[in-house]
Amino acid sequence: MNSVRIQLMTDLQRIETEHYRLREGEEHQRFISLMLEYIGDPQPELRDELIYPAFYEWILEQRLFSSDELRGITAVLLDEQHLFHGIGGQGEDTVFTRTFTTLVIGLIIQRHRERPFLDAAGFLKVKTALLRYYIEEKDLRGYVEEGGWAHSAAHGADALDELVQCPECDEPLQLEVLEVVRRKLHNGVYIFRDEEDERMATIVDTMIRGNLLARKRIAEWIGSLAASGSQPGSRSQYINRVNSKNFVRALYFRREREGLGQELHEALLTAELNVNKFTTGTINSVH
Image (cartoon, rainbow, N blue to C red; front, side, top):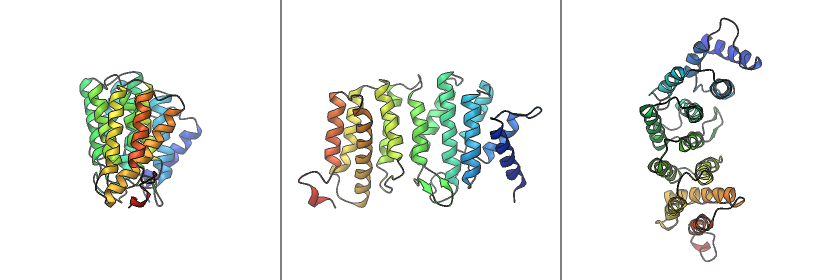
């Protein structure tokens, strides 16, 4: 067995019980290096229950790192051994490295949003890498029996939700984010079943609540989702339509409680009508 991994797990278990405070003589940088090395460990106990909570506590709660240290961590997260490790593969354990890297990137963006430490070039790198990742990630599994949560679509959505709230995120970037979300919903191979639609809906809900993008633009984008309902029948079209329907419903019920406004209300209802093949008069054409 890997003695370094075992020691890291033992140390993080102890650190957790001591409320993430390091003992005298301990350097957090030593733990960070190992946490980045094992961020995609195939066993959920280490990556999901120990490494990610430690990152959360130290980045957001204790604000342990300087701006230089945060930039250094970000550079590692964006490299080919982390965010893009095995990108394009399917059914492999490398997915855990990518998706848990994405979660920590979300923490980094939130920290930047609250107290900026990335310059324009640094923010551009994060934005470009995150959008590229969400497009190129092909392993769309949610919960994996042998490894726990992969959940790439959901974890990526969490990071994108932080991205759209950054002051640097102008209208063109907001629209880029909507486009990669549409592409993820219209992936043609996988129907999301682990509430990924809710996590993606959070991005658009954030845009609406924060008035981050004109409602006309959001309504137009919602209409683009409905196009999957009129495409030629195929398995791919079926997947796109079902994902779109579930997303539209998630967003509708999230926002309707607080008021959508007429434009978005009509856009969502029209889209649902177009992608719902069980609407009166279309039941016989489900397949």
